[in-house]
Amino acid sequence: MEFINSPAAKAAKLPFSQAVRVGDILYLSGALGNLPGRLELVPGGIEAETRQTMENIGTVLRENGLGFADIFKCTVMLADMSKWGDFNRVYLEYFAPDRLPARSAFGANGLALGAQLELECMAHMPAR
Image (tube, helix red, strand yellow):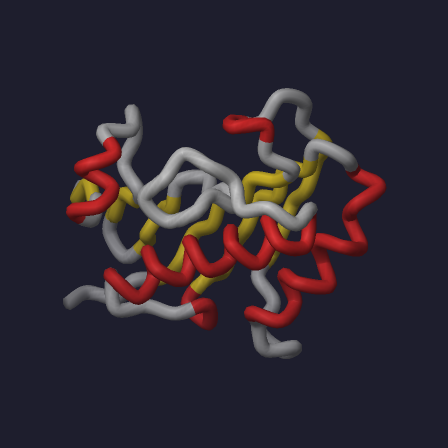
Protein backbone atom coordinates (compact mmCIF):
# COMPACT_ATOMS: atom_id res chain seq x y z
CA MET A 1 0.00 0.00 0.00
CA GLU A 2 1.08 3.54 -0.72
CA PHE A 3 -0.39 6.43 1.32
CA ILE A 4 -0.49 9.61 -0.76
CA ASN A 5 -0.55 13.22 0.46
CA SER A 6 0.63 16.35 -1.30
CA PRO A 7 2.78 18.81 0.69
CA ALA A 8 -0.32 21.03 1.09
CA ALA A 9 -2.35 18.11 2.45
CA LYS A 10 0.42 17.23 4.89
CA ALA A 11 0.54 20.85 6.08
CA ALA A 12 -3.20 20.78 6.80
CA LYS A 13 -2.61 17.86 9.20
CA LEU A 14 -5.94 16.23 8.40
CA PRO A 15 -6.68 12.84 9.99
CA PHE A 16 -6.69 10.95 6.67
CA SER A 17 -4.70 10.51 3.45
CA GLN A 18 -5.77 12.22 0.22
CA ALA A 19 -5.54 8.85 -1.48
CA VAL A 20 -4.25 5.34 -0.96
CA ARG A 21 -2.93 3.15 -3.74
CA VAL A 22 -3.51 -0.58 -3.45
CA GLY A 23 -2.31 -2.49 -6.50
CA ASP A 24 -3.56 -0.67 -9.57
CA ILE A 25 -6.42 1.11 -7.78
CA LEU A 26 -6.19 4.63 -6.36
CA TYR A 27 -8.79 5.15 -3.62
CA LEU A 28 -9.44 8.88 -3.19
CA SER A 29 -10.74 10.15 0.12
CA GLY A 30 -14.08 11.92 0.06
CA ALA A 31 -13.68 15.41 -1.39
CA LEU A 32 -15.57 18.55 -0.45
CA GLY A 33 -15.96 21.91 -2.17
CA ASN A 34 -13.40 23.57 0.08
CA LEU A 35 -10.98 26.20 -1.09
CA PRO A 36 -7.58 24.57 -1.70
CA GLY A 37 -5.49 24.43 1.46
CA ARG A 38 -8.31 25.82 3.63
CA LEU A 39 -11.07 24.36 5.76
CA GLU A 40 -13.55 26.77 4.19
CA LEU A 41 -16.21 25.93 1.61
CA VAL A 42 -16.38 27.89 -1.60
CA PRO A 43 -19.39 30.27 -1.59
CA GLY A 44 -22.15 30.05 -4.16
CA GLY A 45 -24.32 27.03 -3.35
CA ILE A 46 -24.43 23.43 -4.54
CA GLU A 47 -23.20 24.10 -8.09
CA ALA A 48 -20.18 26.09 -6.88
CA GLU A 49 -19.41 23.41 -4.27
CA THR A 50 -19.73 20.68 -6.90
CA ARG A 51 -17.36 22.48 -9.27
CA GLN A 52 -14.79 23.02 -6.50
CA THR A 53 -15.17 19.40 -5.37
CA MET A 54 -14.45 18.23 -8.91
CA GLU A 55 -11.46 20.58 -9.17
CA ASN A 56 -10.11 19.26 -5.85
CA ILE A 57 -10.46 15.68 -7.13
CA GLY A 58 -8.79 16.71 -10.40
CA THR A 59 -5.82 18.08 -8.46
CA VAL A 60 -5.27 14.76 -6.66
CA LEU A 61 -5.63 12.87 -9.94
CA ARG A 62 -3.14 15.11 -11.77
CA GLU A 63 -0.63 14.86 -8.91
CA ASN A 64 -0.71 11.12 -9.51
CA GLY A 65 -0.49 11.26 -13.31
CA LEU A 66 -4.21 10.56 -13.82
CA GLY A 67 -7.32 12.31 -15.09
CA PHE A 68 -11.09 11.98 -14.84
CA ALA A 69 -11.06 9.31 -17.57
CA ASP A 70 -9.27 7.03 -15.07
CA ILE A 71 -12.14 7.16 -12.54
CA PHE A 72 -14.33 4.06 -12.65
CA LYS A 73 -16.48 4.42 -9.48
CA CYS A 74 -17.88 7.31 -7.45
CA THR A 75 -19.98 7.56 -4.33
CA VAL A 76 -21.99 10.76 -3.93
CA MET A 77 -23.27 12.01 -0.58
CA LEU A 78 -25.75 14.88 -0.77
CA ALA A 79 -27.06 16.84 2.20
CA ASP A 80 -30.26 17.53 0.21
CA MET A 81 -31.33 14.96 -2.39
CA SER A 82 -33.59 17.57 -4.02
CA LYS A 83 -30.35 19.15 -5.34
CA TRP A 84 -29.51 15.96 -7.30
CA GLY A 85 -30.11 17.67 -10.66
CA ASP A 86 -27.99 20.71 -9.76
CA PHE A 87 -25.14 18.37 -8.75
CA ASN A 88 -25.43 16.30 -11.93
CA ARG A 89 -25.31 19.35 -14.24
CA VAL A 90 -21.80 20.17 -13.01
CA TYR A 91 -20.58 16.59 -12.41
CA LEU A 92 -21.29 15.56 -16.01
CA GLU A 93 -19.02 18.32 -17.37
CA TYR A 94 -16.00 16.38 -16.08
CA PHE A 95 -16.59 13.06 -17.85
CA ALA A 96 -16.88 11.96 -21.48
CA PRO A 97 -20.47 10.82 -22.16
CA ASP A 98 -19.31 7.29 -23.02
CA ARG A 99 -16.99 6.99 -19.94
CA LEU A 100 -19.25 7.72 -17.00
CA PRO A 101 -18.11 5.99 -13.81
CA ALA A 102 -20.31 3.51 -11.99
CA ARG A 103 -21.96 5.50 -9.22
CA SER A 104 -23.92 5.31 -5.99
CA ALA A 105 -25.59 8.23 -4.25
CA PHE A 106 -27.37 8.79 -1.00
CA GLY A 107 -28.61 11.54 1.26
CA ALA A 108 -26.36 12.32 4.20
CA ASN A 109 -26.90 14.47 7.24
CA GLY A 110 -24.06 16.44 8.80
CA LEU A 111 -21.29 16.41 6.18
CA ALA A 112 -17.93 17.87 7.25
CA LEU A 113 -17.70 21.68 7.26
CA GLY A 114 -21.46 21.84 6.66
CA ALA A 115 -20.86 20.85 3.03
CA GLN A 116 -23.74 20.21 0.65
CA LEU A 117 -21.93 17.28 -0.92
CA GLU A 118 -19.03 14.90 -0.57
CA LEU A 119 -17.69 12.81 -3.44
CA GLU A 120 -15.50 9.72 -3.09
CA CYS A 121 -13.89 8.14 -6.15
CA MET A 122 -11.75 5.21 -7.23
CA ALA A 123 -9.43 5.39 -10.21
CA HIS A 124 -7.41 2.88 -12.20
CA MET A 125 -3.70 3.54 -11.76
CA PRO A 126 -1.56 1.17 -13.81
CA ALA A 127 1.92 0.22 -12.64
CA ARG A 128 4.42 3.02 -12.96
